[in-house]
Length: 59
Image 1: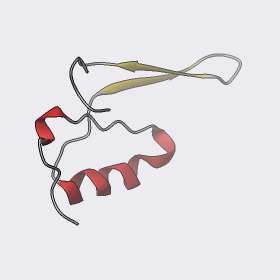
Image 2 (image 1 turned 45 degrees about the horizontal axis):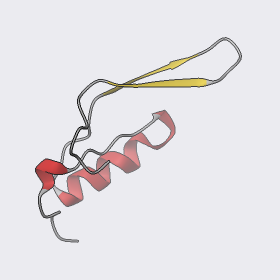
Image 3 (image 1 turned 180 degrees about the vertical axis):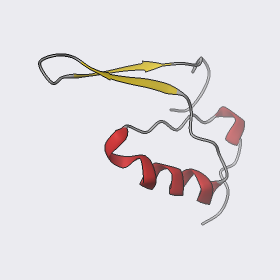
């Protein structure tokens, strides 16, 4: 697989269940995983907070 063109404009995020797969994809295409915080509510729902700006980026 080739590298992504304009990789500086791409953000790739991963949740807990797919972290190894997402890291493998990121490594293969040559971009880092973007930063996010994952937390859980008492009822089991998941909250994701994106910890960096995605303005003008492909997510």
